[in-house]
Length: 274
Image (cartoon, rainbow, N blue to C red):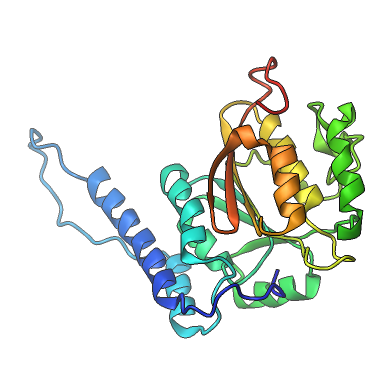
């Protein structure tokens, strides 16, 4: 994820600081409103105290204030997921990829669980040393971008559209060797911004997109918001439409798409795509 070229030379540092400060403001306001006294109460009130800024938010603000490196997504693209996080956080948020935007995603889901899956072990260890509070795991992918055309044909195969445990799937697209945390958690949001997919021998995001859609359908109830970045590329464009479905597409902004996929377990009569 770290290798992806920046889409724009536009300086996003002030915008990222705004996101971090906005997250802090929301937390403070929630605290204030939740602790507002009952006007009818006669209980003696203690002096109000201002909540301290969480260490994770403090680290995020300091990082983006002192760094010249900005995330791969534009402000408008980041805003798509940020609006959903504003409504759903704290929640379970899975991100394929560990990059320069990871602190931001973790901060925007303050109080929730944000997990990052990274293909480059050396890069992951480097980030862990610098930001030990980020929860990250190494992920291995067996596909290659040059196989994408053949893998896309699997959309017509029953074994790739049937509900079931991703670890026992017979579909070649299913990621069956991810860290256990992936399968043991019911994810509310999934961001597919990795693995690498810009050259023929790169792993590509075919399996990540497919598996994200399948675990979303397999959740017990409710919906999963799935975001796919770099849809200006052929693989991300075609696989997101084929396996996350045009009927579930909620929004596209620049190079990012937002899909809202409902549970198919609680409504077994749903077709793979609406």
